Every structure is written in structure tokens, then in C-alpha cells.
Length: 327
Image (cartoon, rainbow, N blue to C red; front, side, top):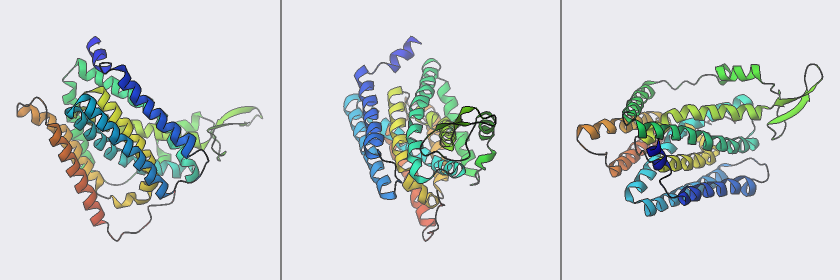
């Protein structure tokens, strides 16, 4: 365990402090300045906000390259690209959750913002646990690799159908266990109202229900994405920072992406191929006697797979101007 702690805290404390300070500044700027007033986020604002996050993420990657070297810089960029791409599949699920809970577009950013706080904590716990396992038991990395290959094959041949959100066991459990109001109360997550006996009690609003459901969805998606980045690098600093920056930017991009997600019809197949590649390269490196699969090759192959999936999707759906669905 001491070896793991040394690896986790091996980076100078100021590097962790610099990262967390930058994330805090971005979150304060997002909610406290740019979205101080409640309003509906349009496509243009969504793209500009996402561009800002991507610029900061790439600048941070450049800093990682400068401080930790070329290898770490490439691993950060590869991890960022993989997490960003895998998280895109989460957009449709988030849109379904907002539709089920009847959250208007003007309030969706508030739910996504507070969801980020939960993601930062949950990903830290998952990545910390993963890093401890890999550090203590090197063979765990091969389990991650085999799991990624299995998940990729399963994803490639899976249909495009999505289950009804209301039929989810967790949603039914929350509906039974929590007092949830039938209507929204502005941007509040909780309100005090009278129950059936006339007592003033605390009720959760559909805003809170949507927030919990999105956090659960993120944990489920993290089961794929966290092992995928560990297959790129076992450095907890690179894994965590690339994860968080990718998620920050994607949540900002949600409002633009949700409207055109139908144009990325074959992205899921590209992500499936990417998962198989990420898992497979662990075994390929061993078979060829390499200490590690070349980071440059990983980045180039990852970019080629994602670009191919996006270009093929846009070409196959050209002329498809149907709306993605109202939110």
C-alpha cells in the first residue's frame, strides 16, 4: 500500500493543487459568472462554452507534457480523447432522463453542473481504487483488458434500442422510497410541503430525481471508461485529470450535441472497435515483447478510429434533417 501511496502522491503536491484550483476556477466561472442568471442555453453558447473547456484541457495537456515529459503528454491526450468519445454515448441517456423528468432546457444546465461535483468525487474514488489494484496486483490490468474486449464486441453487435427510463429498477426504488413532487419548483432540488397527514415535510423535486439518475448513469459508463484509460496509462494523475477535463467539456457540449446526436449513427460501432483496440493492445505488447504499446501509435490509432466513425456517420446520415427530439 505504501508503494501505491507513493505513486498516487508522487507528483509534487502543487501539481495536484494546480489541477484542482483550475477545475474550481472553471466551475465558479461557469455557474457564478457565465450562468449567474437562469436561461436556456442555445447551440452557439454551448459550442463556445465547450470550446473554452477544450482549450483549457489542451493547455493543461501541454503543461503536463512540459512538466512530466513527452510520454505523459501523449498519454494525457489519448486518455482525454478516449474519455470524451466514450462519454458521448451518455448524451442520449441524459436527454432521456431530462425528458422523463420533464426538465426544461432552462434548468438542465443547473442539473448538469451539480452533477459534475458528484462526478469529480465518484471518479476519484473509482480511479483511486483502480490505481491501488493495478499497483498491488499487476495482473488486474489484464482483467481490465479482457473486459474491454468483451464490452467492445458486445457493444458492436448490440441493437440501438434504449430501455424506458421509468422501467429502471433504481428509478422505481427512488419513487417508492422518496417523496417526489409531481411538478417542478423552479430550480430547487428540495422543497417543504404538506404530506397526506398535513405535516410539513421535505420533498424531493424532479430536479433532484434527474440529478441522481444522471449520477447513476455516469457510474455505469465509468465502468467502461476508467478501465479504458488504465489500459493507456497507470499513472493516477494522468488518468484522473484527463477524465475530469473530458467530462467537464462534454457536459458543456451537451446542449449542442443533443440536437444532432442522431447524425452520429455509427459512432457506437466506432467506440466498440476502440474498446477492442485498447484492450487488445495490452496483449499485443506482451506477445511482441514490448514493455508498453507505443503511446504515439495509441494516439494515432485512436484518432483514426474516432474520425472514421464520425465521418462515416455524417456521410450515411447526410440529408437526414429530422430533429433529434424535443428536450
